[in-house]
Every structure is written in structure tokens, then in C-alpha cells.
Amino acid sequence: MRIGELSPAEGAVTSSKRLGRGIGSGLGKTSGKGHKGQWARSGGGVRPGFEGGQMPIARRIPKRGFNNKFRKEYVVVNVGALNELPANTVVDFLFVMSNGLAKSVKNAVGLKVLGSGELKVALTVKAQKFSESAKAAIEAAGGTAVVE
Image (cartoon, rainbow, N blue to C red; front, top):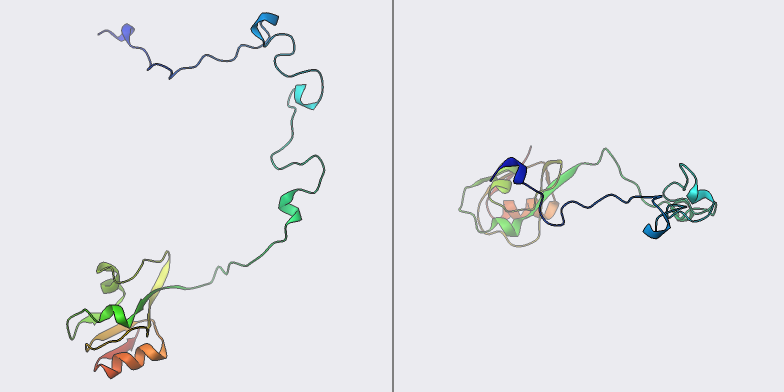
């Protein structure tokens, strides 16, 4: 095979629309733009979202909600998920993420432990936040809850 014998795959290259090449082409005379008007002019047409002067839908619908750019997101884990761990394990943010005990959260600032479920194993849990029920459950099982 020679370089001159190479060609693109079938249907990969489409020929350009040849405008103004006679009435028989179907794109002669007005070149598919009809007669006069905004759409026939050079640079004609309207911007995206323009509704002919009617109040656009983006402005008719009220704005809702608020995104606080200072909000802190935490990775959340329940004490019930920690029940399968061996006794005296030190549980912290990196341990939870590496063992897949909780879903990852984009831009998370730390770990929050909630009290859903039962805990029967004594663990040392290091987190940024604890719910009162989580702290009580960890201490009732003989473990310690350390706020980092």
C-alpha cells in the first residue's frame, strides 16, 4: 500500500453544501435562505434564548435557592457501619475512605459520625464531628470518641 492509495473510511468525509450553483441544484438563486428577511441577511438571525421580544423563559421563571460558598461538607458514617471492625481499631477519615465505609464527598473537610445502628465493639473514633447519639454509642461500647 502506498500513501497515495490511502483514503478516509466510507462516509467519514461529506462534501460541503455548494450554494448558488443554479436552479437545478436546489440551492441556487437565494441559496436556501428564502426571500428577504432577517434570516436571509448577512449576519442575520437572533441570539440563543431570544423569543422575538417576548419575555424569555429564563426571566419569566423565578429564581430559587442559594449556594453557600462557605459551606463545609463532611463524609458521613454511621456507627452501625463500624460494627464489623476488630476491637481497638483506630477509625479516622483516611481509614473510612480507604476501607470504603462511606461514600466520598467532593471537597470534604472531614468526617462526621452519626448514631444510626448498634455498636458492640470498642473502637477509637477520630472525627471532626459527632452526633450526641453516636458519641454515647461509642462510649457505651467501651470506645473513645476523639474530636479532631
